[in-house]
Length: 139
Image 1: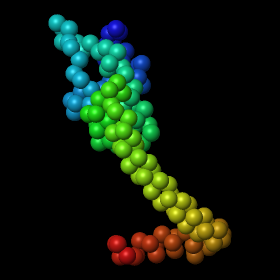
Image 2: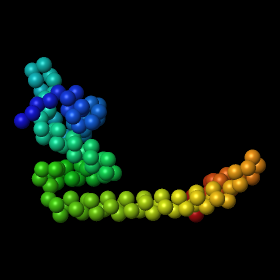
Image 3: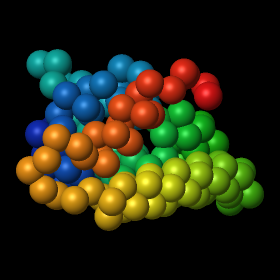
Image 4: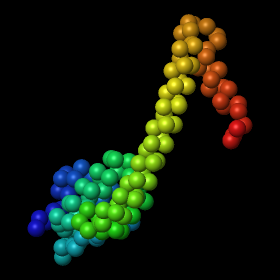
């Protein structure tokens, strides 16, 4: 079983040292044992957990979703059915964001198409932004 300093763990996982300390503080990773001099000594379980957390965040899982998966047992012990439920809800969120982005892309593309691009005082992009800004919230 490996043992690592916080710097070595940071280098191997690509997770910033301050982030590792934060994850310990909020309970996402177990606090490591310390040497008599007070230095943290991390092991392979920390390495695996940090790699898992980093990758889950890259995939867009929220901190709460990552915590939920870790609470279920993390990469070593979580049951697939429970993790699948979290991932399914996350997929719904991703699809919703994609639909919102597709609408935004369409609006921007059509507005830019209507914009002359000339050095003129009237601009379709400005009009679109102002029209939306002037609309009452929730309208």
